[in-house]
Amino acid sequence: MSKIGIVGTGYVGLVTGVSFANLGFQITCLDVLEDKINQINAGIPPIYEKGLDSLLKIVVNKGLLRGTLSREDMFNNSDVIFICLPTPSSEDGKINLKYIREEVIQLGKLLQTTSEYKTIVVKSTVVPGTTDGIVKQLLEQESGKTAGIEFGLAMNPEFLMEGLALENFQHPDRIVIGAIDDKSFNSVNNLYQSFTCPIQKVTNSAAEMVKYAANSFLATKISFINEIANMCELLDINVSDVANGMGSDSRISEKFLRAGVGFGGSCFPKDVKALHYLSKELNKESKILKATLEVNQYQPLRIIEILEKEIEIKGSLIGLLGLAFKPDTDDMREAPSITIANKLMKKGAIIYGYDPIAKISAREALPDIIHCKSVEELLEKTDVVILITEWSEFKNLTSRDFNVRPKKLIVDGRRILNWKELETNGNKIKVIGQTPP
Image (cartoon, rainbow, N blue to C red; front, side, top):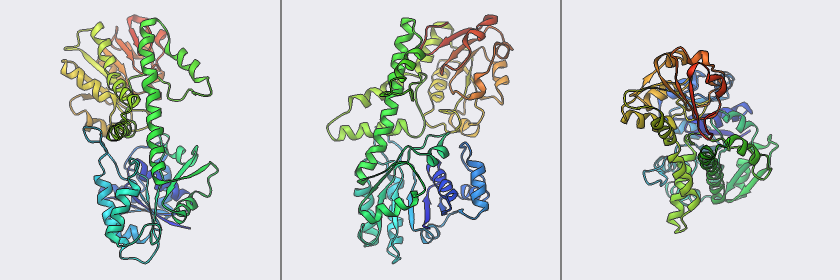
C-alpha cells in the first residue's frame, strides 16, 4: 500500500491526510508550524471540522498518521505527495502562487537526491495551466529529471465543504484526476480503489478548471437567489417559495438556493476572483463572474440598509448572532460578519458578537467588537440582533429568549428563525428576502 505525504495541514491537507489514514494508508503530514505539528501528534486538530477530532485521535493512536517539521522526513516516507497549500488572492483577484512555488522548488531538490519514483500531486486550487506550467518547470529545473518519466505529476482537486469535509471525502459525488501520463494517473487512482463513485481521468489543466468552474457556478447560484430575494422583498413574495419551486426542477436542484447575506469562506470568494481575473487576462472577461462578485459584495450591505430605515445606528447596541462564514466551522475568512460589523462600527454602533465555535478566530478577525460568551449574554446587552450564521442552536430561539431585554429589532439574515413567534411581546422582525411578516 502506498505511503502518502501531505504538505500543509489546513482544512484540505488535514482532512485529506486523516481520511486516507482511515483507509489504512501510512500518512506523514508536513507543516512549518511547530505548534500545529505538536497538536496533530497529540491527536488534537488545530482547526475545527465536524468529526475531525475523534477520527484524528483514532488514526494517530493506530500509528497511521503523524506530523513532522522535516520535509526530508515526509519526502523519504512517501510514494505520493499531495501539495495542499493555500493559494490566496491578491487585491486585484489574481491568484498568489508564492507558497506553491516555494514548496515545489524544495521538492524538486529532494527529487534530485533519490532514485525512487515519486508522484507529486497538486491538490491546492490553482488556475488552469499551473501544474503543467510552473509546477512542472520548477520540479524539472530543480531535480534535473523529466516529469512523466522519472517522477509522476498529477492534479487532484478537492470538493470539500467546510463543516461536511470528512463526509465529502468519504462519500464523494466524483473524483477528478488530472495527470501528465498513465503512470502518474495510476499512482493517484490506486489510492481511490475502495471508492465506488465515478473517477474521471482528464488533463491537469482540465482538472484545475473543473474545480474553478464548479465553485464559480455554485457561487453564482447563491448570488442569483440573493438578487431574486432582494426583488421579492419589494414584491411581497416569500423567496423561500420561489427557491423551493425552482429547486424542485431536477435541472436546477435546491442546493445553494438559500437567500441570505452572501457567501464567504476560503474558497468561493477567492476562486471566483481568480477565475474572473484569468478571464480578463485571456481578453474574454466573464460578465457572469463579475456580476456574481458584485452581488456578493453588496449583499451584506442589505443589513445596513434595513437598519438605517428602522433605527439610528449611531450609539445603538447591536448583536451579531454567528460570526463564522457558515455553521460547523470556525473559519472567518471572507465572513459577512466582518463586513457588517466594520460598517456598523464606522457608523458609530457598539457591536457585540457571539459564535459557538469561532471564538479564537473571531477575536482575531474582529478585535474591536465585544465578544460574548453565550447567546444569553448577547441578548441581555443588545437592543438590535442580526442573525448572520445559521448555527442550529439559533433556530430554536423564542420570544422568551429575546425578551430578557424587551422590544428588540431582529434581522434574520439567514431565514431560519420562527418569525411569528418572535413578534410577540413587541419584537420587530425584518427578514432578508421577504416583506416583514
